[in-house]
Amino acid sequence: MKKQLVIFLFGLLCIFFPSLKLQAEVTETGIPYEETFLLLTESGEEVHIIEPNCLENLEDVKAEITGISIPSQWTRDVIIPIHIKQEAFAFFTLSDAAGAETLSFEVYKDVSCTSIISRVNDGIEFKEETVCYVKIGAELLQKGEDTIFLFSVTCFQPNASTLVNGVKQSCVSLDGEKTSYYEIKVNKTSQIILDFSGKEIKAEAALCNSGKKALTNTVCITDSNFKAVYTVEKGTYFIRVKSANLVYIVQPTIKAITSSAGTTKSKAKKVVVNGAAKTGVFLATDRTIKSYWFKFYNPKKQSIFLYAASYFSTDTLSMSVYRANGDCYGTKELLAGINLANGTQIADLDGNGKVLPLAKGTYYIKVTKNVKKMCGYFRLKVSTKN
Image (cartoon, rainbow, N blue to C red; front, top):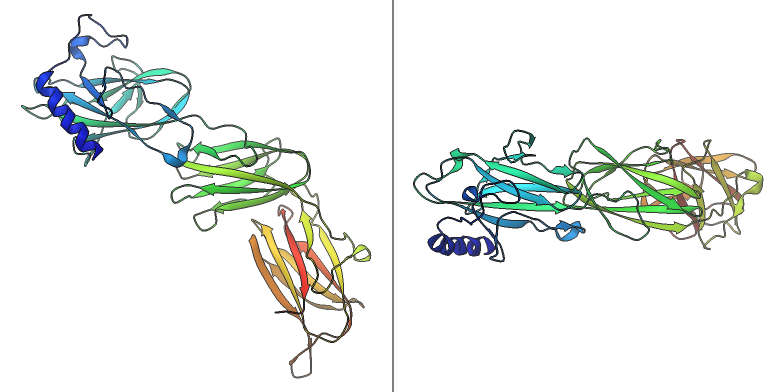
């Protein structure tokens, strides 16, 4: 509807203003006035230079469309000035009057179009306030009649270098091969949950130390797996992101976390059957492959189930159960996920492999991270309910 309105307004203006010529010889952009063209914004304002506004929030992205009217007597290339008001990422698109066909153009640093910036419709990164020039080839002009183009600009502020707890950060990735780093600070041992969003999001993320050296393995971010979780001690870290999306949003949530697990069998923390869950925290800065110990007392012969909820993004944990005499019942692998339930039954077997209720007594649980770069936490419950 808006495009139809633009075209309608152009039709009226082209009747009453077949060409736009002012008294002075040269505009402030260096283009002679007799070589300027009628530019009309979506609001109906006539302009002589396109000046897009820079967006802060990528959640409600809207391109600014400017109509360009070229009189029928014009036969040379068309030069349109664009004023980028600040450091920014900008995306340009040129189409026909109906907006149905995307057309090619070139972007230059200078009005004489000798120093090219881009020949394709990709995003352009501007490091400072800039006036650039879009060249539309004469071969795109209609023969014997006026030509109307629609030129759209979407302009984004540059990425912030720091992530702030609870604040959505809009990010732009002009090149899917380019890696971005975002600083994040924590003032005590905490969990960091990163919530990514974007249209068909596809990215890779990893936690790095203050020197930008990776502390974790890479997690793949997709529409179905759009969160990453890390556990860190007090300090400064960087989140490394490599995204295939032009634009995406990341929101960090930082919460303090403490471990309620023992570091050796002799220091195993008690878990009450059908009681509260206990937490084991594996930090990104752990220097060794670490294990945690728990113990529980089964007051009578009955079925016992273990539930371990995973809160980590990469790699795995191993959960082993032992009798008091040291005999191992077995080991279960805990998979990566956010609040991913890993459940298993501890049972005795008779000579025919039949599951029997667990005998009365004390049992030990050992949870070990299998890869040094794994970080995150788990919550463990012991229950009589399946």
